[in-house]
Image (cartoon, rainbow, N blue to C red; front, side, top):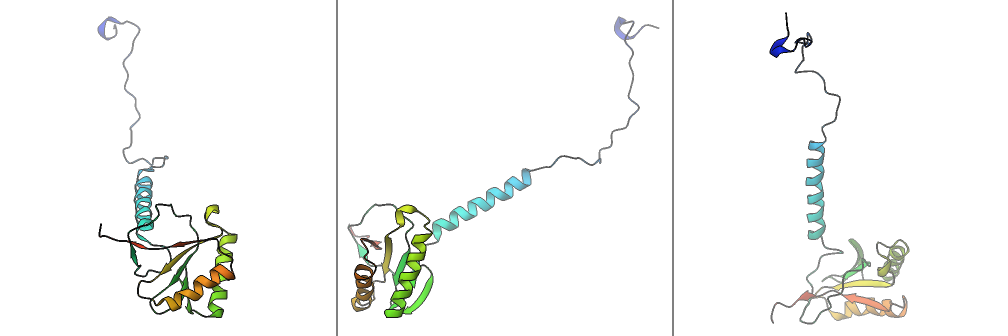
Length: 161
């Protein structure tokens, strides 16, 4: 008997194997992993924008300010109560011992910098209601003992224009 459609040498056969639908697949589906990683990346990106550096205080407002980018220098804060902070760590009331501790922590941050341009610089935040008599010893210590050349003062943009 001749094959179908006039081809004498062709034979039509059906495979005797059954394909199992519930067979184990040996490849990895990375789509859920990528979805989870993208969500985590977005969360961390948003959190870093929301999180401020150093201790949060209400800053004095000013109309004139610099557009210079952050250099990831250490943040020193004096809050309304006169407490001295380095980054998020409270050192206590401004005194000779807390100023020395501030010096040690700032020097340690400079020795392992996040950004080399921040070495030798400090970002200083003074609360708007703190009396100047509590800020002065910190600035004097930075100038005379630490021989600081660059201190960046934090301000809030004045909304009145």
